[in-house]
Amino acid sequence: MTVKNITPVEHRVPTEKRHARNQHRGGVLWFTGLSGSGKSTLGFTLEEVLFREGFQVYVLDGDNVRGGLNRDVDFSPEGRAENIRRIGEVAALFADAGLICISAFISPYRADRATARAAAGEKFHEVFVDASVETCEQRDPKGLYQKARRGEIQDFTGISAPYEPPEKPELVVNTNDQSIGECIEQLATYVRANFKT
Picture 1: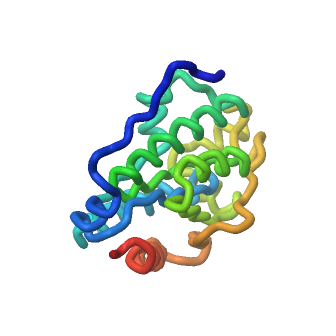
Picture 2: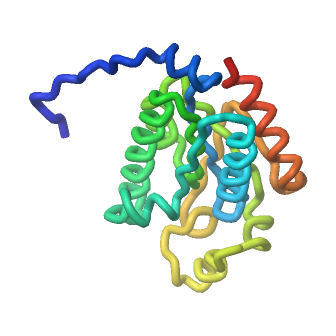
């Protein structure tokens, strides 16, 4: 749908001034991976670490966003696409405001992640939180894999719906073999190297 009669309005605070005040660039860290791979755990832990270091940072998490902004979208391929499209636009706004937005979403389809990347442009950093289905199913912190195996959840990524891993992510964090602490250090090092001014 094309919306008519819209005229974009320019902000009066230049991006460079936002960077100077925050002492870091804004951007999107887009965590993608299977349910149970550790996206939310890593996202909220990294948020704490970066905030203590003076970064302006905020996490957008799948369950939290689906309880508000996206409570009207389902888990069908079309619903997932709309969910990610909206989040991509919101995350891009956070980045434009000079914040680091950590987005923790399964986001199983490459095309949908490409839409999110297009919204943020060069500020987009895709982080593949890599864990096998077997590892995630052993963890199963929410009991979702058990429900999916019993047929109680339809279109469950990794079981009855596909997951398309990133082909060229900016960063891969392997939670099969690395501890939370090791993953956080890898992530924090990446942020310091790529966002500090």
